[in-house]
Length: 267
Image: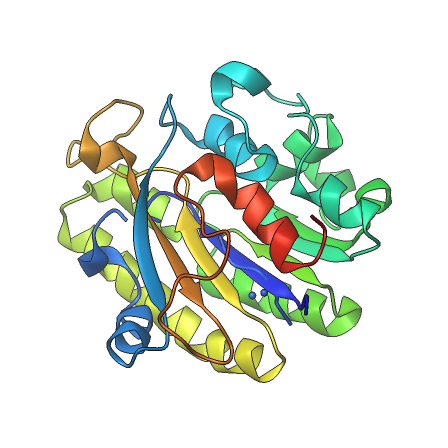
């Protein structure tokens, strides 16, 4: 029976959906996820991100299930370019509703226009059945504030699918490096944010899919081919618990779109 999904796609480390479905290394992932894993209430795996291991191209890949070479988003500077059909098209075609709290590049990939913060801050995308959205454009926008945005959207719209995309880990990685204490502290802060939200999401019937676009090198960057830049987590935290891989579990980033659509009864 299809449910609701929350997709928590955090920038650079390692998405989440409402099932009614809401890494580098495990040491970098939220400790709450590790606790659920040890209790047999989560399923862990890792993926190798597509190339180039850059943010905008991989946002597009997670959303539309195609490689950057196929969808044509090959760099971070391609502002205002739509990435083609995405999981939101699948959900809309099946009559499923969505909401998004994410960085403004996601808006551009979906809307196909350059983001204007004075105009688009809360712009929904009715053509994709995205009933509500909150877009941020400063890399240091606090993850805690983004969570509050996401919760406001959940209560206002009760979407079947909620995409949440925090930036805190990526910012810490660029500032301090992927093996730094500053990076570890950012992961701990993200853990505290997630610990506030996850019980509420589970109580509301949401399952959580947690992943990332790319990894982070100790030299404060990513974009290359090294495992530290390409290995990302894929973690399933269902509201009813369980450590087994669900049906259709993705083996690559290209399978995330299909997995979410299947969990919501769209394929």
